[in-house]
Length: 572
Image: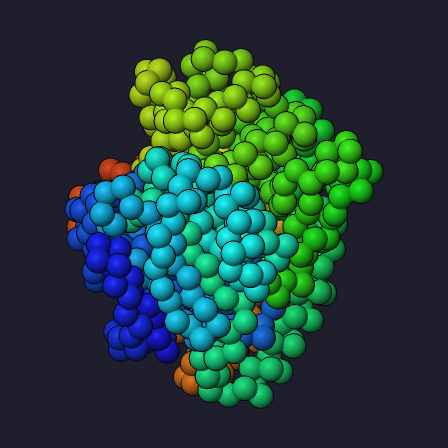
């Protein structure tokens, strides 16, 4: 097991054996441990003391399907907390096949200098001046880099938003078609990468030296079982391939929990126009692709390729969260406009969720009108131009709310909520409030509980306990490199048993439900301890007051989980 340390201040690179304190960790757990141990909690997130940790999961680089999620961690300039954001594509599998457990970026390049890091098929790394690429958007950048370094590479990079060090800046990674459409979007980690003076990371896809699997035969058999369970599961085997994550549009609207028009309503007028069914029909009519493979080793194929009326590529993949943030939240029901906004955010290097909500706050404050697609496109383009309004939008909803002195700003710890209103899905409100990383749906999404009838979405009872359990499970899953959507398959006894068997076979130690939960709890405790040392208290684990005071149609419900109950979440 090895990792690469890159000091941007003096451009030195060290390849080291992973310290014993970090062995057995991967993905989010590894990034949390490194940041907790090595980053001063009160440091400036955009200063030289912060570190950017790029870590594949424990199972990335193995033959297991759907293990191509890369975890990127740092102290967030958006939330002031520890942050892990993850992305798909090819980079996690590529690093895993090189036997690289993590890349740790530290220090800060001299002012005015910008670099790229390349890692070849032998795992050797070098820094090179990236001055010719300064200011480039991600699509043009990745095309140029693949031309220079060859097609057998994958890329993680920032666009203008990252170079401007804006708080909604993403890190974009290339998919299996070499497009920079996969985003580690949340938390402004693109700004951290920009602050380091690092424009891009180019990683060979031809590595052939992965970490040893302790029991390869057991791993192989368990991986086969897991893949079979994914194919048998109705959600991962049928719904996602046909409609992608956009299938969720109808489900959340049916719950009255689709926050639209800046979270003033729970059902979007004309939601049928932006549903998964409408999206799939439009794509097929125009000759685009559904059932598209976006990430290495994926068998779910939930991605898509959206094309325009002439059949020309626009974006991939158009996901549920972006359909919401660039659609319902802005009052826009036109898929072409939403797809254009998705492309622009990927190209400029912006989190579509935080950016969409920032624009929704501006519209709610009267700056532009809801439903004005042209205005939304112009606002995103202003981010690339670096105008005053562009910087406000690029710094997220809090910056916009402060500028307009507007009270309805749906954020926690500075990060916007996602496409589930906490008044219509109370457990998601618990997750938003208590997550170590600001409002974050992937930290513990409760949608499945409500659709299955296991929990009542509008009541306070049971929400904290359910959110706690899901947050622990998600923290553990984020350590493995497993896709959250494929993780749905773990609901069966056969699939979860196969997962535990694979972790045991990989690590050479018994991993069962208890040990798996301990992995998640350890990660959460590290993150929470960092946040507390950074100065956060339980007062930061709260939703904005308007969620507790303004009823959400159609149920006319407010958020009803008490502060006292929220404070019990970390009792484990």
